[in-house]
Image 1 (cartoon, one colour):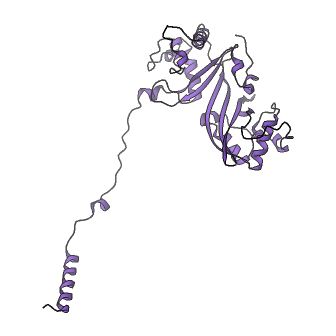
Image 2 (tube, rainbow, N blue to C red):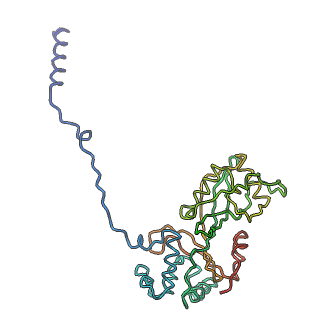
Length: 303
């Protein structure tokens, strides 16, 4: 029988032989890593998409001017100022579709009247454009969530500077509707201003103000006389009882200065008719449907 010593010597020899045997390198560990970036030209819908409110204003003013060569939009198929302006509406709005009997809705007829009045003759938007906005902010009150709806107006100074200010807010569902909550904190008279491009970045500066400054009324216009529910919101922010988390939906309102108000919303989809489009249209007869803080500012103007 083979002794233990011989077994141990044989085992050592096998181990040494295995260690000296050349082995293939691990290709997964040594293979160089490379990334190839393939640049593709933008598709038609990427070119046609209205990427910002400023882009919308430019498209609008190009569309209503028949003498401007760029008024004809080859991507949307517009062949006239009227069709180019109609392409700025949300084409998926069911109110713009004719019924099975061929009947047009009241809204569809209102849109047609607006396009006719705006293009015959041409009436571009005045610059600077009068803008207002409605911003929904997700907030926490304890372990429950609510939506803080804030209304803002873009203001312009005599030296062409601009900024956004709060002009009102809706009542929070979770805050008690007390009739008397006292006066707002004294430092609300020290105003803070939101940058002029806040609407192009989903009003993130407003969100930062609600979080960092724990205040809504410091961003308010001097003309705002806070209602009890707005004072309650301010005090809840100051105490840390109310916490802002994120901005949600944003609507921008454009005053044409001719008795028409356009409500813009952003439609994220892969088609030409996408981006910032007209989601609703108000005239002197329907401005009463606007939220009160905006309705008091957008006084109907006769053409």
